[in-house]
View 1 (cartoon, rainbow, N blue to C red):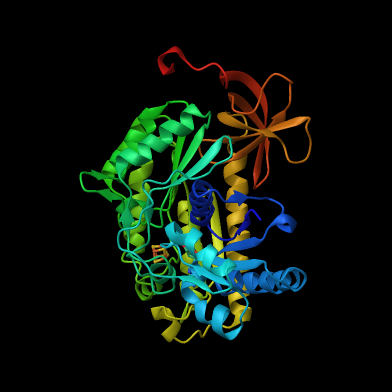
View 2 (cartoon, rainbow, N blue to C red):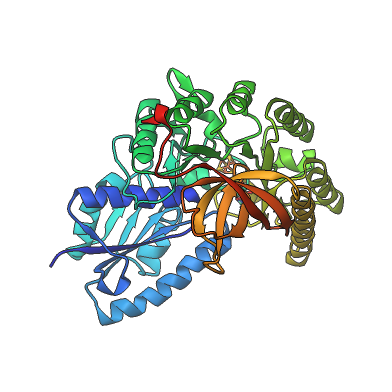
Length: 448
Ligand code: 5AD
Ligand code: SF4
């Protein structure tokens, strides 16, 4: 029987990119990938450990999958990703829920582990590596407009709340040449947006080149391909990087810059290695250097010992920066991290209340920022029909905002169009088409 592999992905974009990598590895070895779980004899979950509720979801899903195994006992069920590192013992020995556990640095050997599991043994590969970057592996991607490229793996920052350094290991970067080559292949295949990914992209380092060099080289591949990147750490965002973004039109003027908290005392307990003053200076500098740059952030509510005053400082930073968007979380204690040893002393009720205040404030900031765009003109990359109706199209601005506009039957997915914004909510802009700036199928002469 031919092996049919089904993969479900949870968590961050790194995992989405890793799933494509895993599919590339399996494809090379002749395994078939299926989108239909019923026809699969190997079911893999690429998992996330970042917060308690992410892991709970996977445990729930494994409970469902058990039923499939009751009907088809030779089905192999496997865990990839961060949970493979964190809870392998629990999954394999104690709860006996899975046959296969393979961590983020052992995917090269996944075919071997799958064969072991199919033969009735447990396939276990959880070693972390200081060198594995999968530089030579071309991920399996379906055709589309947007692609993710992971440019580095791991993290050396050791923020005290975070499991990533433990589940993904030390930082290591791919070579600039292989990444630029991947951007070229994507451009030739018709992709129009590439996001360069890493837990901390500003630490990217390929002996000779830094992240600014990588961004510049990627931008030069094809001016009609937008380049995005995430995530930046406020300690390492260099002036050179800001000037590089300012210089190239297709480097998006949008920086995801997690602040986590507005209180210097909490930032120190989190080991974030910057002060709020440094952070705000950086924002001011970026605004001076990059025309109409915008920011998004990550915020944690209710870190150990957080007082009401600390919380107010977080709200204050949000007011000062006026983020375009934010990912907002309640603190969740993770075993093995430094913060796990601190008393998780902010009550669940207070965490919820503070988180809701943060979410409400962000929503009103987003609403006000979007209102200011009414009457302005924005260039968008058309992503297709709007979710609600084929009578409308949806596109995305350089600053990552979704704009909905009427479908005239001419504009199509992949075009760049200019829109006049005439209405806005906190999440979406609405506009009327002004002109097609760059159609999808006709490239400019210098690109040919
Ligand atoms: N609890 C809550 N949020 C967390 N994050 C990371 N670890 C935790 C945790 N233990 C958030 C941070 C990080 C984002 C990816 O997830 O804000 O930037
Ligand atoms: Fe986790 Fe901090 Fe590294 Fe981000 S920078 S992955 S929050 S340790």
